[in-house]
Amino acid sequence: MTILSLAPPLIAIILAIRTKQVFISLLFGIWLGWIILHGGNLLTGSFATVQALVDVFQDEGNTRTVMFCALVGALIVFIQKSGGVEGFINVVNRWMLKREANGKTNSRVTVQLLAWLTGILIFVESSISVLTVGALYRPIFDKMGIPREKLAYIADSSSAPACILMPFNAWGAFIMGLLLTQGFENPLSTLLQSMVYNFYPILALLLVLTLILTQKDFGPMEKAEKRAREEGKLLSDDAVPMMSSDITLLQTKTTITPKAFNMIIPIVTMVLMMPILLIYTGWETALAELPNATGLQTALLAIGKGSGSTAVLVAVITSILISMILYKVQGVFGIREMVELSLEGIAALLPLALLMVLAFAIGAVCKELQTGLYIATVAKSWLSPALVPAIVFLVSSIIAFSTGTSWGTFAIMIAIAMPMAETMGVNVHLTLAAALGGGIFGDHCSPISDTTILSSMASASDHIDHVKTQMPYALAMGGISVVLYLILGITTL
Image (cartoon, rainbow, N blue to C red; front, side, top):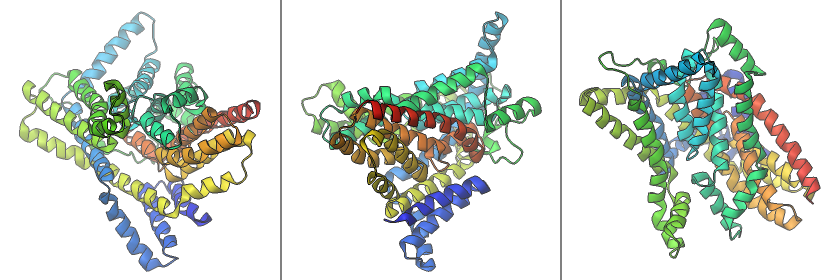
């Protein structure tokens, strides 16, 4: 556990930003990590890199997540070719035109507000949130000339922040499980009391709302908005969208009438199946831990004990099957045609599946190198009580940025920060909020974060362009959060 453990993720991030070659950058970072682990031996390190990519599929959760990423392509193709997306757009357009005729709304503002609100309401799981917002609103944003970077930003900044502020989902259950291991007898109460101090997610959500209502952007996003408005370009000239144009430019089948429910029913099915499957997969474990609990208490605990990857994969499979039945009953598609469309959608999202494999692999090598533990250990040695919340936020940010995982950051930082806060007499709710908010902040800034990657994919945006346009907003809210933690850290001692 040395400073060399920082090299693979940092170099991968720097290369990704400078070259825009995310695949090569991640692969180089993985390779470098295994070279370091093998003492600089290029041959054994290279063989270990290949084996590490194969080993990604030894983890059932990883395999399910990769399958989910590919199968989402089939669902996207279905809802576009069936006329679901076009039907939804028509409904939204009619509603906005009616309000505009009455002088009640600005259509560009309204559609962005709807996207922001949708991202918040689907707080069950961040991946479902960003994918839903992208699938629903990308065609509408395109029609209104709103840049893809703005959609990616809205999807990204309304998903994880909403999930972390809502304890009744897999996020909340996971955090409560971590608090239980630290001896907190009532983790739900502890988590709820920390919400008011979780500044970054709150500020991130409010900033999106402010930018939409004022129509005032800054930094790279302002340039993207100007490009889209004046030149009609939804993407920059050198952009490489995360999703193939084969899937983003699909037209409704000519022989059918577009209907919004052809999209709404599959999407709602996928969203509702997520908590149901979390409860189902975690029920026996929850019942064994709390045999005398009420049904509601068992269900809430089961959400945290359930398999998130299983829930996501089965949810999308269920949605695809419901879609097939729905379209077959209407005579929209035949069985053969639906199979062909499924394969077409899967093929279009294979690059994303590969990217997730690389993201898992670099996470694994960072774990072997103990990157997160090294950062946390170094920071712990010079903390003073008044600075604990601010430093915890910053350290969590660095870990999440370097490793691309907020959940991994929570696991590391809660185990370190909570005992430290109790020992040093620091407000535990403030410290918990700092650890959680820092994880979200670092995740938002990291180009190797799965949520950031999915946001780029769902919006069909260039990934690095999404990172560049979102980062100034994230840094601004992160900076304000640090100041607030400094003030409260000093005044609450």
